[in-house]
Image (cartoon, rainbow, N blue to C red):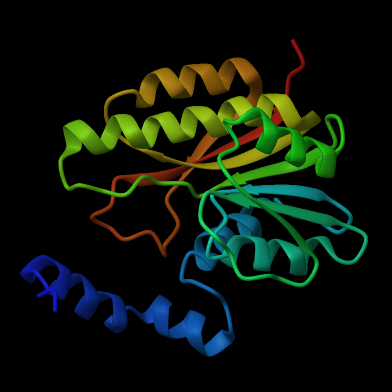
Length: 208
């Protein structure tokens, strides 16, 4: 039997004491991450009835679950992750790496050509605890999400993408501002204070 390390034990203790974890369980959401999206949506009116939403790095599905409630029966939610995800009513899920053309083709077939209103990405790498390794991995995922946004969003569409402050952050910001008319950053209350994560909110895609 594998013994828990002191750090993993502390994480578990903190996790189960977390009020957002308890709230998510009580309200039937798949993870505490839902409250990050909920706050962004409440403040920015990000999701509306009838929209088409693409959720990258979706598992276990809390963001897709929330998006489904906001876009209504006339909207569409497409989710993708390398990991498996339990089925969600009204959510179309593609398992695989969207960098692979076969997976990207499936997502594009579901979404339609430039038919996505909002791209969501809460993707993050498995953290090693070493910034020199973790930061480039995290920024690479954010870059991939930004690239996909440019590929699938309608003119004027928007994106909410997890990014990490550190090396590569300024370059990503510059790239986003070339792609979108407005770019801002949010730190939802549900983001742990010690985490370097923030969320890039980009609106009004420019078609160059």
